[in-house]
Length: 199
Ligand SMILES: Cc1cc2nc3c(=O)[nH]c(=O)nc-3n(C[C@H](O)[C@H](O)[C@H](O)COP(=O)(O)O)c2cc1C
Image 1 (cartoon, helix red, strand yellow):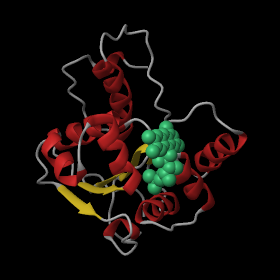
Image 2: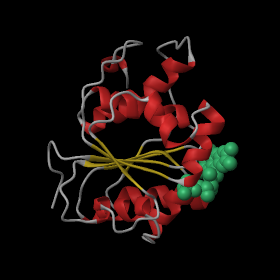
Image 3: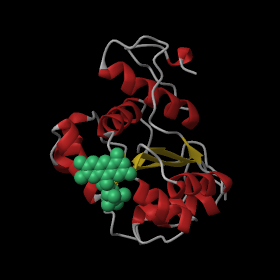
Image 4: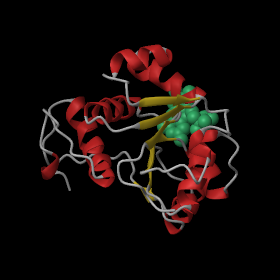
């Protein structure tokens, strides 16, 4: 089964630096009323707290708009809907994506709901967008990125450009979020700058 238009997007937040990207992306998808299946890893929650001051799922809910189209799943629940290939889906985004989760996807281990949902997206030939952040990159990181790309994923490193002369961290965050929204095919009404200017 390939991507189903209008079906939920699975959004996973893992423990790489870059929690502000996740917050902005979740708020933008909620503003666009995109149905979501949300999974946040334990380290995803830790990075949300350390980098944005958002504490726990309740804090994330309070910071990201209308959750009426959000279904929350526990990362340890490998029987949750995102684990099923027969559940219609528009695709999956992991933002940010830790090198640990990237490696697990590259190896097909499926030991958490996030890893399993990504594995399902690849086998069902649905969009899988990974937003890793690490520097420098080891040969293992690079090989894992190549491996998942060859399997059908889109690796979209959290490396914003500067040619639009960003004047704030929000501008830099929106640069990446606009690229993710473009790949999902969801209009992104940034009030900070226009997504059409992004390359
Ligand atoms: C403060 C902090 C910053 C981190 N930054 C990164 C990072 O930028 N990239 C990365 O791949 N891992 C980073 N890590 C390590 C991951 O959180 C760790 O490998 C974790 O096991 C990932 O698990 P998860 O993918 O299930 O969230 C960081 C950890 C901490 C505590």
